[in-house]
View 1: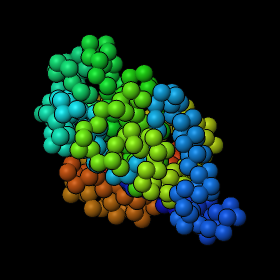
View 2 (view 1 turned 120 degrees about the vertical axis):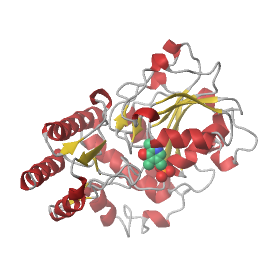
View 3 (view 1 turned 30 degrees about the horizontal axis):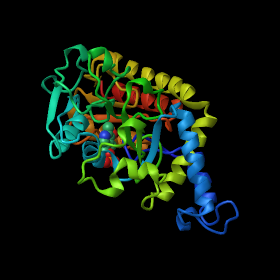
Length: 363
Ligand SMILES: *Cc1c(COP(=O)(O)O)cnc(C)c1O
């Protein structure tokens, strides 16, 4: 079956192979007589699914042994509260505000600890990243938060900042929701990273937290037990019932990623896709992307039509050409193509072909 290409920002397209396997296993997982949704999270069948998902993702992300990989719930927005509850000790945390998501993180954290904005690109419309050398970090922040890929604004860190080189010992907290597993992570720079699965890894309902062992012991007394990283870690993410079906589907995605050749191969494909799409935008007279070239996101490509009266015709034409969910986020308007791991190069080629013929028709 040839499905349309789906450019949703999230929940986002899944590999066909994964959905087909899940469909085949829906009523009876591996001869167990049960579907995965019907299994006890403490039984041996789900135990196997969980252990494989953990091991496969650790391998894909090349996660060092001194980091815990937690499977939680609540998504990126809940982590905006869970992180300060676990890491701030009520002391000041620093935020680098580079788009809608890091801005939300700073606002939410301020309910639990002083939140200091060390740098912001809001004045220039979130189209760049501030040079870390210019960040106004506080004296001894409890942690420094960045969003390494701003899903709405289309701005991505292509290298993580090195806090130590800035004379700061604090752990770096990274919201990598929308580009996790699209490229390698330099874990030597990271204290904690979190991300909802529904952008690049699987279905909604699963949230990944990667946390360095030495950060497990800092939670505020008011931190809910089920959200305390140490409790979650000590119970192998099963202090309470984890999102079992989402973990299973994400686990199938991890195996699919390994079949693609792992993160290095996936990254090369992501670079090819993004290069093709940005080149088409830049050479056109109709489409426009405002983000500084050196920090453009490989995953989320926002673009505008210079004649915005054509927006509805563009979206309708795209839909009939089998190109879905290209409408931009309501806060910024225009269009957005999210080209996560599950979008093949052919999908981006089809999009570029449609964009060019639409432009020719409306020249
Ligand atoms: C989608 C997204 C979030 C919010 O995730 P929810 O699961 O809706 O809470 C947070 N940060 C980033 C970077 C995102 O892309």
